[in-house]
Image (cartoon, rainbow, N blue to C red; front, side, top):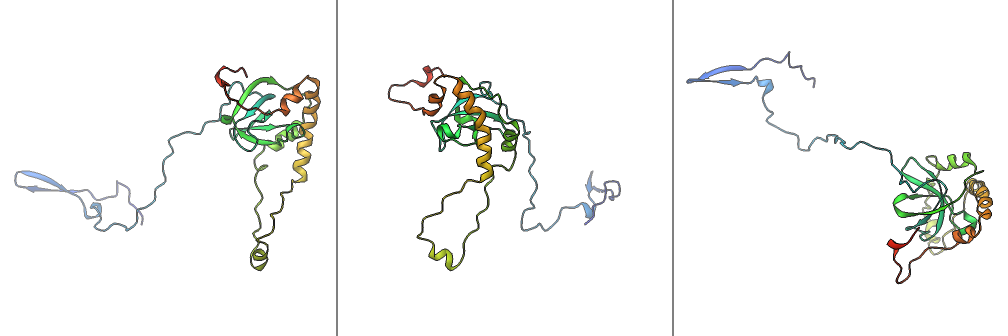
Length: 207
């Protein structure tokens, strides 16, 4: 249905009732007698504007972080880059403590005062790893029919790491390992995991 502009709509009529007047709208302007059974969906107005994430001042590339949540909680890792999605790109390195290239939320890390020199690191690989779609999971092809029924009791297949990811890990860690070995006790520091014992006071610790 095409709606007419206000200029083309017929004007309302005025009628006298006793001493006063009453404005009677045109039949086309009157309210509908019947309404739709279902409410018409209207798009919600987004009042909040999307702002870029601001990293904490202590989270600089090369900082040694302590992970507080997830599979690798308690591990000490190296911060490589701030990603536009509002997360951090980190690495163990993998040969030192088994932490691969990952994205972590900045809320679940503690920034320490230890710094690692990122000189000589492959920036092209870091940009590639930090790009969108790198960490997306591949869709599994679900087995259907008799084959899936007879394979229910079997052990699940181990996940195979893609060769491209393994080569990216080696390219990033190669320069980091040489810089880590230059500093005394830094290799052992990254290998050790962080944990709190009875009587420890985190608020009094110097990170």
